[in-house]
Image (cartoon, rainbow, N blue to C red; front, side, top):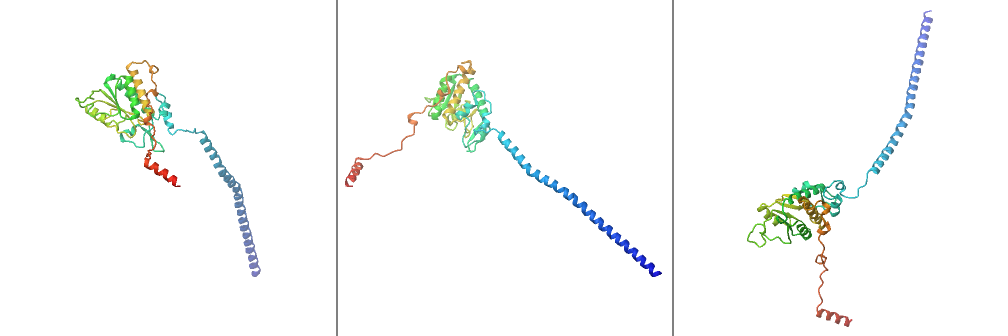
Length: 310
């Protein structure tokens, strides 16, 4: 009896173990199935994200293309200069005559008048400041009578503008060479006592600036980016190398001085044009032919003999 009871107990324990094993297997299978389902569901989401990522650059490139298309193309190197407003003349006149173009060199005293440097290295002057300084110089010089002002220009391109400017306002012009002692030596035949001096180029007309400073005469000067403003009271930042820009500068100064004095009612009453102030090229200024030596009589005879021998 005891043996039978033990066998029945063993069978019952084995049956329980089998049921527990089956339940464990069933749970594992259920868990595996539940894990596979979200993985399968995530696959389409991942595909959608990849597609979205591929499509996103296309939209960005399209936006960039539209932005590039919207930006206006500017042909001029000094596009920002054209947008500035000027009072005395239209901004285009300054730009067309090259009045705003400086040199590749700049001094510390001219830095504040420079707008920017171009790719080729040339410094560009601020057109708006150029316009303002021309007006300031004209108002200052208008406070003197014609004979009290002397205009100095040793530079060839500045001689015609300086002379025409002096004739227009009744001043005196010293062109070509400035004789030392003109302002400082009373015994000199060229001695004169001006109340104001107008300079075309501070580098070339340095002697006139030096003597005016000694005699405490105010100096107004047209200055480029490479000029030094030492002993200059009023600077007009402008291209003082080109004949067109010099003509424009002196034309504006003459017109504005006469207007300030009340000699003309308005700008339209000034009869002269900027072309009247411009230096005209002469035959002497034309490029010369390269030098060729003349053949002597002996050379010509020897060449003719050589031909005969051949």
